[in-house]
Image 1 (cartoon, one colour):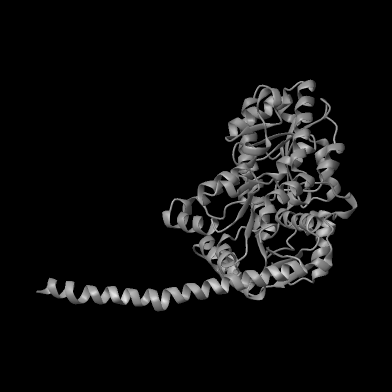
Image 2 (spheres, helix red, strand yellow):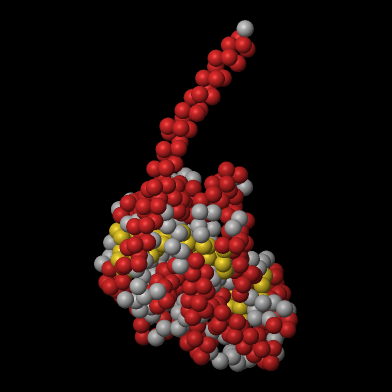
Length: 481
């Protein structure tokens, strides 16, 4: 009896209700949405033909002065050169005056842009993306918080083209579906962590938002491979190496303490560094140079452990050991970094290396150039560095560089084949120690060949190459109507 009632009464009612929903709700909504969509597209196209395209960059900390900001400003310069009718808008949480931000970009990166073409869209919900707002699940909640900031950005300006240059992928759906505009991004590193990747729901969520981008630019092979694994859109993903070019030396500050990162101070000095250094004489001390901010991920303890292993290898050659010195050059941002330096000094003392290790904190600019000129080789120890601009700088300066066998140095920068070697790779302390000995033992001809190959290889990372690659990748965005 119950089954008969369900089949004769309930199921027909459900079917009728479904038809009513489709007829009076779903279909009208689809027509309204389609009409709204076409109206927005038509208005945008009309205004774009009249006034030029509104290209919006999502870069909340556009005045930070780091490598990401260099990418932003060089990209803006390239777009204005190729598409002079474009209007550039930057979504930012910075409070500095527009002229101050533009002047800093010019002074620090030697990037000159038409300020009349730049408009800063001030965003007030800064706390939504700040790490200190989220004591737990920081990266995940920051990503979700970026959607709040993205909504504010959309409500203040609905652009024709949206480009994210900071890695906030969770803003993509807002501009793809609400703003109805093409979405592009330049990714320095995937914001999802290894622990998050192991959780299926996080991978799926990050993949869904990432696939909302029409064009994806990765700063190197390591980042590109990870994005292809996470976002699964290889046909829309392009490798665009970050720019590294020369600027007049007089435009740089004489003290590193005014900069956010020691690494980025030399981003623009490749051409000058190529001219600064001659090969170290055999009678000179053997200085091993590290240029890296004193942060945990830079793994300075690994360098000290490598020196400890090197001393063990040279236990019967004290004369050579006494000529070797590790010079750790870096900047301290705060008291926490200063404490980290003291801990490193304590570790050096514990390993009986205090006479063989020198710490140079917040060095004057002239001192840094002197370090490049007088050092014999360079060392880099960060695991999975997404690119490794400090490695590029050292190679450009004529230092034979031993970098970590991972990330950008492994995938893009250092070539280890004997016939075309540009440097060395290592991962464990004993590997670094053996590599250092191998570099020291090189003949002058071998050293010269490696240095010349390394210097030639870094030309791939010039501003000109970046501009060409960026514009080629961004062309579908700019020509999409």
